[in-house]
Image (tube, rainbow, N blue to C red; front, side, top):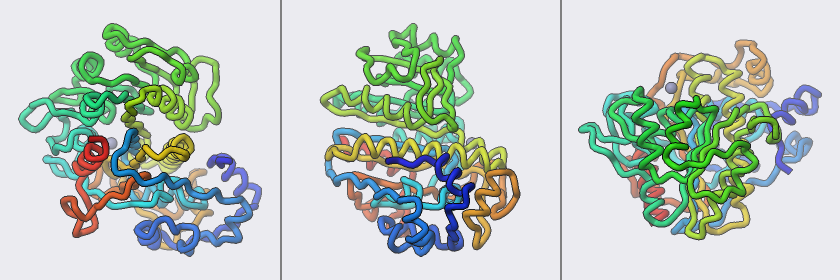
Length: 401
Ligand SMILES: [Zn+2]
């Protein structure tokens, strides 16, 4: 049984958890060993864990060629955001239980990246200038991982908890010299992206029309995505991190449920699929220096990761990659910050953390992989234990081709 963070909060409130976490300084070190989180973390001790019945992590069988590749992007999700999420939850996030992890250098040609250049790097393997979407710095259209998947006969999907004209979903499906060119981006995404499924936060009617005009069938309710038979579908919903189950009343849906619906739809294709699913608003929590907002979005995103693993766990043809485009807010946890601190911080008490920026930073982000044993050392900076954001594209490409 999957436990949601809401349940964790309830348990914590009921005084059933007396978890004392070690300082966050240990968290990064823990992650490099991964897999052994429950045995070697030295944080939440096992007796506490047993009280709430930790699930075993889902580890997918390693493949060298993946029929299905799922990329999940936490926008603005730096290592300290993840550490804060772990402290808040009182146990490892699902993404932290992945068997392979490396760190990722995120700079664009402009220096500190924005989400447009970052998405372009992840989607195309090319570093570009901030503001540019799906093009190189000379404004030439780039081939995306979506194009590559489609050329292999795979279905493709894009999910974002923001609107579709956001820089991340557009980086995988649109092309424009400037991220603010909403009309151009949506038009190119709708007419030439090779995306079978778009699902996002509520689209303005004029933005939705780009897709319906281009032959996309609008799927009114999220629970109808899984059984849709059309080759091109678009969904526009209220995606609420607080929602537990999917509701039938007008398209309110939790991120994890939306992801599961999309997987059912995409996997109808016998050639497999590529899915990019973004937790878009972790970034907004960082920009607003709002840890409650950030945690809500982060945990909701991680619930989505868990849903993907639940879907993939009995398969031997699927790779799941979780990463971020950049860090936002320069979040720093205090040395020795605790689970109780993060519960209090969530409720608005300023304890255990500080923000050092209202923008993006150059902090390396994490990349977690489940389902393939990647030789990170063969990539750009791997002798320093890091890869570049563009290498995430190379990894996905090599898994699919
Ligand atoms: Zn941002």
